[in-house]
Image (tube, rainbow, N blue to C red; front, side, top):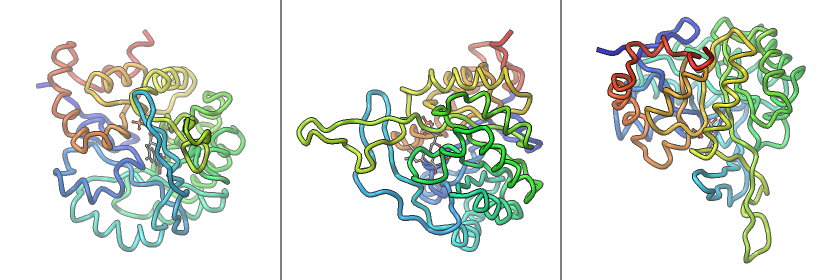
Length: 304
Ligand SMILES: Cc1cc2nc3c(=O)[nH]c(=O)nc-3n(C[C@H](O)[C@H](O)[C@H](O)COP(=O)(O)O)c2cc1C
């Protein structure tokens, strides 16, 4: 029997698969399709202090082997998530959940860390400093090491829960941002968020997305994500959660060999709502085929 269990910041995952933020809502719709307890965990939709309607439509564009979104962090706000959605979630998910938070200021991030850092159901805070689709905040924090460190420090002061800083591939140097987050007290890093991208409508001679630019995700970004995880693994000592284009058990193993301790699955859930349970079911056979007894043994193994 192979062992798919991994430890992420002192919290055990039965398997390394975490449904990625923004591609899984707060889990409710998926819980009507399958038992969410088969997941390692899931990261809930990026939540801001106040509710947000997101960007105007169209906010999804097709791309070769992927998709571009400019959803813009549509969410019901921290109060509704804490008071209504977390209690509901307790009915259909019985493992620690990852709380994905996003702010427009350092103060917003601190307030969100304070709110979700005391919720029993929350296993980790995933601090999104990498959203390319919001005007202020989001990626502007993740592209600059000093700003990323300031957000990390502000969250660290508000909670003892593990803090996972979510990084953008759109930074000048993702490794500099990673090192700044580690030095400021991050427990782990997750990467990558979407890659800034756009499409143009030939007939209208205008950008497809109302917001002009969005973020590319799906299989097209897997090699970029692997390169980022590889580089960051060589730059920091804290664990990494890898994501970007993962849709098969082989992709999960590749991401772990590059240096990821756990792996998030995003856009694949939008193509096939059963993507996560299918990957989880397929992992043991792929491990046996490759002679892997325990997944935790292969983290970073490609680095030699
Ligand atoms: C429609 C959509 C919405 C997203 N919303 C969020 C979000 O709220 N917070 C966040 O940290 N990442 C968000 N992401 C990024 C994903 O979590 C993930 O980092 C990215 O899509 C790369 O993984 P994938 O190729 O498996 O989708 C979103 C992605 C998509 C496609």
